[in-house]
Length: 73
Ligand SMILES: [Zn+2]
Image 1 (cartoon, rainbow, N blue to C red):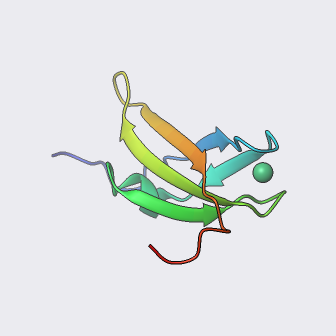
Image 2 (spheres, rainbow, N blue to C red):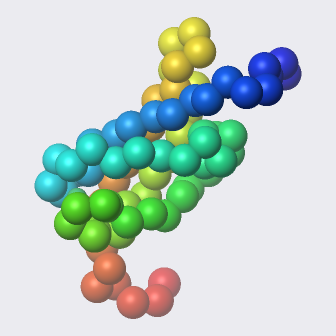
């Protein structure tokens, strides 16, 4: 895999709950196909974010809200 250093890759996704634009960190972009939990910058809901490969150099970001009420598994 070839990655040019210094290239800043930022990605945004919409919160499924409130529609606010959240920015995803470059560190998370490097960890594809894994679940990342982060909070929406606006409504503070817990979101499950998965970074997937998109077309060409772009990435697909799948965000879904997590029910915080369900305690434990
Ligand atoms: Zn939100």
